[in-house]
Image (cartoon, rainbow, N blue to C red; front, side):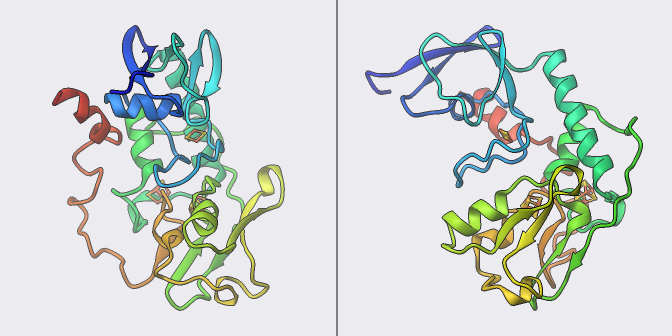
Length: 238
Ligand code: SF4
Ligand code: SF4
Ligand code: FES
């Protein structure tokens, strides 16, 4: 532990933080799970989804972008914040077209797993059933926009990890969509199945072809353990 180690307090428990860490990174290191969807440890934070919102000294802030500093008092696992997170997840479900039982990502999907973790079983908001375009033009990778949650992981991975600019966003508000930089779709870009972006999507939106159901249902990432339990396991084994 460095001399510069700081202490932050999350839900009344002291947690060590290193200079340069965000609140979410310090929490992860200490085995405290803060829900998140757009964050990925290999990428710079995007700040898109707001699932990771905590209260910092009484004020809401996204923990994946907020720098840890000595003495911060943070609320995370409270009913108020979890209700807020549940509403965000519910909105993602009703804005997209999600049919989990027939989705290849079921069991590996972070959105689905987050809904289970937060206790969202049946949406209370009306489904919007918006038309969303499928792009199966690429020989190895497809985009099923019905399942996109606009987290931006693909776009950040393409830029930061792959040195490309395959993905971006187009449209605004409810019409915002993931876009590609080829006029004829994904086949018109320099996307490769070997790109990091091809395997970083948290949902069933951006998927590699011919890999469907390679891992049987029942043996998938979240079939038996809730999302976040890998992080919480660190605390349990210390
Ligand atoms: S992407 Fe996830 S939430 Fe959406 S249908 Fe597939 S498994 Fe369900
Ligand atoms: S395609 Fe996947 S990774 Fe990209 S923004 Fe949509 S949900 Fe996120
Ligand atoms: S995980 Fe922090 S805003 Fe999405």
